[in-house]
Length: 98
Image 1 (cartoon, rainbow, N blue to C red):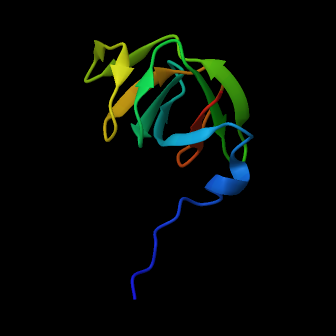
Image 2 (tube, helix red, strand yellow; image 1 turned 180 degrees about the vertical axis):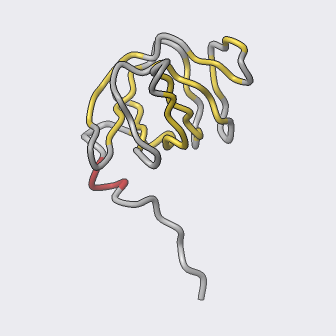
Image 3 (cartoon, rainbow, N blue to C red; image 1 turned 180 degrees about the horizontal axis):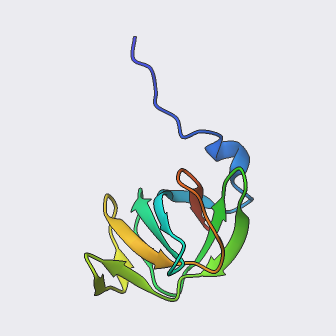
């Protein structure tokens, strides 16, 4: 019997029309950048919803980097730096807001 791996509270945390696209793996508070491990592609200009035990806000992705280089789109499996408008914590979930 194979057990399915589930994201913690992902279904309960998502608002209507939102898709889980990643999770925060690190936060650099001095420069307000979250490192997000992507489970789906993400592009500059899209709107994301970051939700965790202490955090819950929606913002547009204005800047994104991969390996210290500015990029327009992050790919599934990449860890990208995203400029955020609020404090976030490791394991916060990142949703694509519709």
